[in-house]
Amino acid sequence: MIFLNYSEEQAYTNLGISSGGNPWSYLSSEIHAFDFVWNNALITDYEKREENRFTLSLNLTKKWNSNRIKGGIQFEEGKHRYYKISVEALKAENTREYLERYYWSNLVENYGYNLYGEKIQEDVGLSDKPKSPRSTQFYLEDEVIFDQSIFTFGLNYISMNTGAYRDKNLVYPYWDRGAHPNSTYINKYETDRYHSYLLPHFSWQFKQNERFDHKLKIFKSATLPKLSDVYLGRTHKHRIYDGGWFYAFPKGPNANPVESSNIYLQTDYKYSSTLRLQFAVFHRKSETWLQTAHIETDTLGPASNYMTLLNNGENQGQGFELNFQINKPGVKFLANYTYSHTTGTASYPNSNVQDIALFGNDTQRYDFNPDKRNLLEFNQAHRLNAWLTMQADKNAAFALRNSSLTFLYHFNSGHTFKQYHGSFG
Image (cartoon, rainbow, N blue to C red; front, side, top):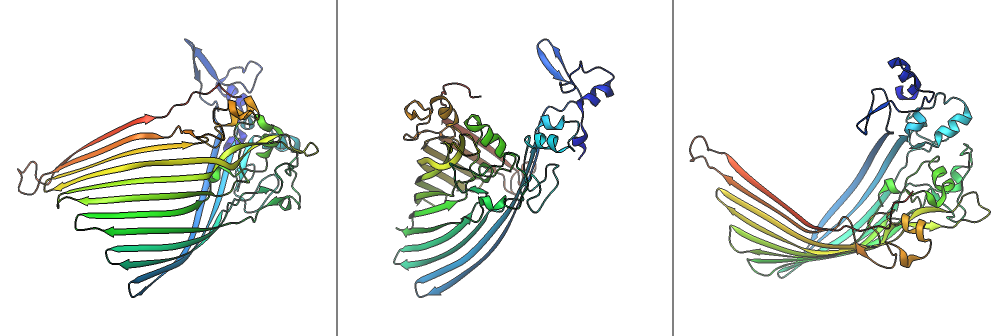
């Protein structure tokens, strides 16, 4: 990899100037208080990511009188690789000596790649093999037609493994300060932890008459957390266990899948062949959102107090949606309005890092109190989208024949902003 041979001192030499005794300084000039970086100066980190997924599924359907029975199985396995190297490591003149490699490795985040960005299949040296999330799902459902209604009763069984190297004991985590490769390294972690869930679901579809249709869905779900929030390489642990609770970007290898309960009710109204209305209300709640937790370690353990992500957050969202549609020859109009109200204990997994750093266990002073739901930053209360398309048919004037004109209107309002106590770092 060419960038590993990069030297800012050489870059200065190539330009025929002196570095001023600091070969790691950036090549830049200041003009009227604005900094301008020169050519050949590296000022940013390098990263790359590769994610692959293999899915195998089998589904069967059997009709029996007024029943339609469905069943199936699905297996899914992924392979995730990640590599990021700090610009500071790129300035190192020599990475062949072990001590320098050890220092340099602390500036690398990697799994599935070695320290030099080359793909690996197994744990090698200071580098972890690719992360492999897995899930197996069985489902069975019965659809029953009764009079003007269609009822669906179902049950899903799902077993998931995040693929992360989980600490067996959060209070006394395994951490070799030198991250030396050894045959017992992998045995210090829990890698085969599967989480199993029975998830019922129910739906009811009722055709009231030629104009009204109603649908109701009630179901539970379980999904893997955002995997970039739970995966970390071996050298990444240095910044967490050595940096302790001052590290503002924790990962959560011990995080579990996220469960949620959902309700959805929809009514369709067909006023005529050209005009249709649809109204729906929805509600979703989860009590297992990822959120930062402060871990006080055993005083005899190798790690300092640190932060990690656990499923101790809560989220709740509800709202309604209105759709309006006109479809006439030459004119098509669609409009959608959605109102949502989303609250939670934190907007992002690390939103409360600053709270812990500033106020410790005094949760009443937190911006994100773990016992109170706040409006979330990504909540958008009002959203309106409208489309109008006018189509000229084949009998129109030659210049307009088969042409169309479309207008699109977007409106968003009610975005949440939250004031914090101050910066962290």
